[in-house]
Length: 546
Image: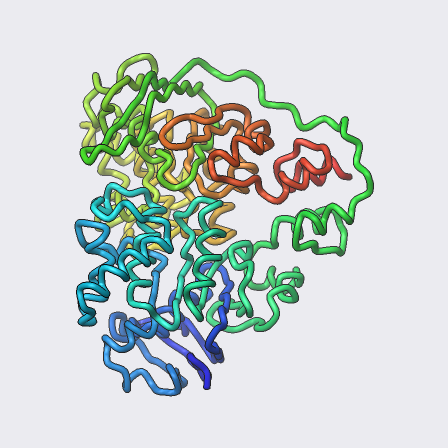
């Protein structure tokens, strides 16, 4: 008997004109992990909601087909029994956090299941150890990094000891080195699961792959076979693996799955090929941090003695593992928090000398989760808030709102409800809201989190467009590929200190520094290094190997 069985399952949300899922058949056996791959609108989160009992309970709609858990329909399971059998980490994992201490968060589920106190304490210890949060039991969740909070949600689910774990894009806030380690640990500790992704590189090691497009199954079976089929992946709107994308760009038929395999497909490559030239010198300093330190009230040192200078026109990626201080640094640079020690200067003046609204005219900050800064009832009201708060006249407010919405491609949506927009458009709206204050410096905290391949490309095109129009761009990212492709400079943080700062190509090829920071070079950078080249992304490497 299958642990989970879906037979011709379909689901249509109330008032929707199209089904979110249609004719889906899926069997998950005990001991099996299944990957679900698809772009935006594929139905991945709808599948999660159905399997874990959130749909149609919390979002009404019409369910078709049959869903069985241990051979029994959902109606035969009470909520507690189902929660103990199937665990869910949602894509919007922040919605699953609501208590004031890490240990209380993990204890909540077992406590509601009536677990004894000694066993509950044991479960807390074990779950926190699995996700790497031991020693943080007394920390308030809102003092943790985004990746640590994502790990905390996973720990709270693991404490229920589910037989089946459903993880909906579970690495969105994890650093590149964190997910492989966590995934390996999960495989050893959880017997069965379902893992969703919009990027196939996150599904390495699943036993079987389900490829979705617009709620329908395009393919199901051996992961290697599906991921080697370019046409199939194109139809699904998901990217090729980086090495496969390189070989496709070069017009070759091979689709290597590893750097070792790719190396064997190249003849000896000359080591004196020049890497693309670095960009010319930039403008004067616009952001400066001197001796910047931050110690949280619980004694955690988030930043220690950071010195950083950013020049006008730069495009800088800030990298580091979870808890390294990336977001804390960005918030200090944006003037959202005051340092424990040291100074931040914006265009030569200390940020503390400016009123907060006025600082927003020089430095715009875009949160990782756009829903944390969106609050108005219409798109136009959202973008108009900043200029109104600055005392602009109605004519100036209208001009700035129109200009900002056009810059991000949202003109024509002025009367829409912001929260009804897709995630990518909400992210663009957050950018527009910052742009309406007309800052020349923009700080993005994980601008591509939760976006599929096409939305990521659109967002990065937007950032490049802003840089081309004279803005200085800093962006935090956990995607090494994103940094390799788009950054001109990388600031590498570790334990609240700058470990490495320099041209992106040099930092990405500095393996000892990346190792110390708990990060790994992207496959294409690793391949380039093995071939004696300093290329960083598909276009560069393909040009070098042509």
